[in-house]
Image (cartoon, rainbow, N blue to C red; front, side):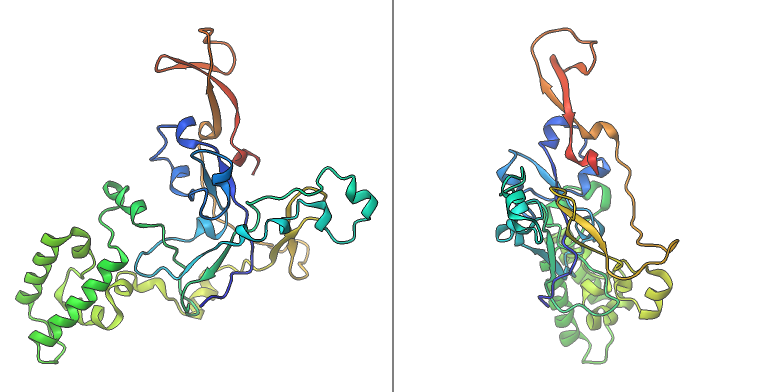
Length: 309
């Protein structure tokens, strides 16, 4: 608990994405951004922006009952360590540094860190908390997802069921459990979703906890990881040796020619999701980069920063 994952990541701003691409809420790009003021200081720069954080910020899934790591607010304290300020770079000659265009620059987006929120077992999947709203807004796609409090209440009710109905023999009366499920469903559909569907699974759920029972494969053996996983610790980020390049990637060990440096999942984006539009005067629709949409003339004025990456 409290240990920091050692690879600082960058946050890439999405500028007012809902205004520029208002019908993209069901697109893949819309599932990954964080609020601009959570991981970086992006809320200082745009009105309704969002932040993409490649790495753990996109790779980690969410389980509200098993969340075990969270972001660290390093951007509030360490903006001078982002690698853009030439005054902070070691080895530069003072006279050159003072005339450098990067003198005194800083960014809120270059030191996104995560730390363990509780003790994490070897082989345990890392889960971050997306927030209840993320799941309730997508309920029609992914179904009913219990909250952390729902799992806690389910654990308590199952414990009471054992103490009251079975005399400590580890057997649950099916009729009593069916009544419990009906009561839970009437109270809160998310609470009902936290319970096992089959009464035969209740003793195991009681032993593991309903949250862990719902994701029984979330802790894997070292042998499974060695067979199915990939080490990604050949790289570490640090201040780039190129002036004003921000952070760069460095090898943590000698890597032989032809060897795999790292691997990463890919997501597919629609290019139009990265376009920036601005309402303009005039009716000369048809010229380059201008369209008419809902009685407004829009001109494409650029692209989201994400296009560079």
